[in-house]
Image (cartoon, rainbow, N blue to C red):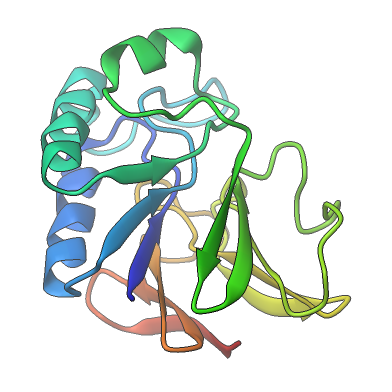
Length: 182
């Protein structure tokens, strides 16, 4: 089963459309969105193709084909949930993938620096920092797909792929940014 993780859309219809194209190209079984859907946030510039309503419409269309798994980011509000036709206000979601527990959260509460109670070899995935990560901390795999719309620290726009015991962060040209075997 192949999972695609995207984070920090921040209202960019341009980058969301590119990410959804990658989901199809990658032939993913499921899309997981790691928060910050519609609003660009007070500390961020407007991303390319800023269109929060267009983002909501595009995500709702996609969700009718394949259900989206999602968590709330620090820039998401109850009004965003009113526009989106899938649950996205949870602070975290637990997934079971190929016999492993995956804790998915945006990263503004629990984070790589402040891990929740997890067991060795569990997987922790966050967004929030806009910086890709593929590492191990205290025996827990810590991952971040980066941001599709507003990458930081000279990183490229990116997304994450989890399949066959490997997590890969890719840019939109198909280059591997980060990789870890789980």
